[in-house]
Image (cartoon, rainbow, N blue to C red; front, side, top):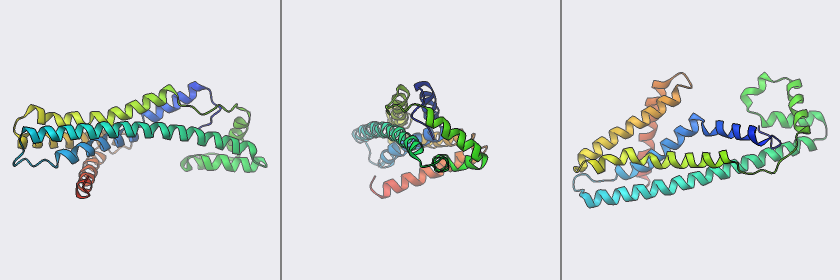
Length: 224
């Protein structure tokens, strides 16, 4: 749980940590790759000329640009909603009928994984701190906007390495083979980087490739 009564610097530091969350970054990269792969995979290399390749690249560019903007907007909405939720939680703690009820609100707003490590005295200490700290009006910070811009870049820039082979190679079949190889490599590297945080980089790397291929197949099957 975050509390809205914190000074701006701690809030910004916490938001920065959320921006750098490897799970968030991996999710955005996976999403961006799926978007562009649904377009490159729909290209018929048997009869694709430069006009067809150009149309595919323009469509992929527009799609990743649009979804990058949408994802960035959703990131800001989520950040704003999180701040408002924290403010309501602090107000609920202060409005609790007694200290026990306040501690229950504190407990339910904390991640379940850390609750076993907290005693009643720990929850009471948190409750007392939240009772004393001033409540600030929820507002988006510079770090929130930087995070939204980072989300946009992750989704949009995934297009470039996958689309670049279609610019460098005239033969559509060769370009598609190289593009797919690049996409698989990016999926694996993203999963590998994510897996380093769990101690299983190779497993997560191959799992990311599998998940990406399956999701692209589902998107294409459903007309995506």
